Length: 148
Image (cartoon, rainbow, N blue to C red):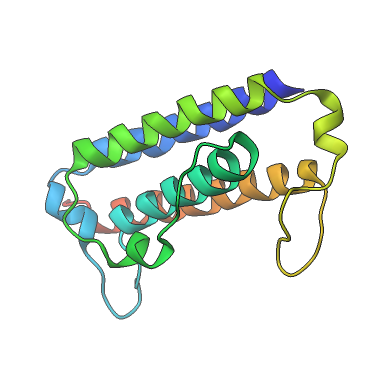
């Protein structure tokens, strides 16, 4: 089960990286308007923070301290830095999944989520859907801004 989850997460993070690389101009990563309030750059930073917190800090005891507000406030982070952070997330996920037993998936997640206790498998599934939701947003953001 661990390897299967890791492979799906890694594949989807590679898709996020590919999207970020496809922006013709690095500055376009940060464009927002009244109908698109989150830039691709901020969505990518949000994914980095989310995965480093829920997997790295909580399941992997990495010591990562999340600064969620900065995920949406930071601007003009270089494309290379974003890509490096996303690639680092793949490494974090690999370590966490490699150290999980099948029983760990059925245990309570170590912290409440949404004010409730949940099983670790539920959080892992939720985080995958969260990743894909923002991957789709980044894809649409990029295509809306593409120059014809």
